[in-house]
Image 1 (cartoon, rainbow, N blue to C red):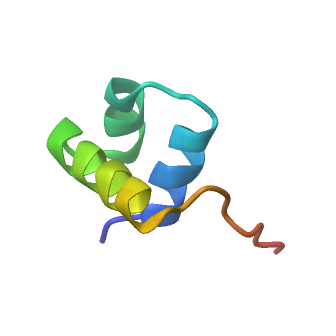
Image 2 (cartoon, helix red, strand yellow):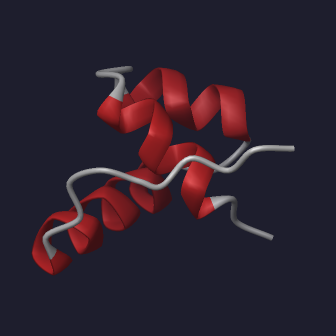
Length: 51
């Protein structure tokens, strides 16, 4: 299962896509696709989830 929230949180923290890829276990292409889709949808900030 792809953790979209984690990928986007790391991206918004300006973590490099290569680093996001290795830390989440997803390919760089997958990370790039998710980031691009979020940009196309105008995702700027994510709501914080409190445990």
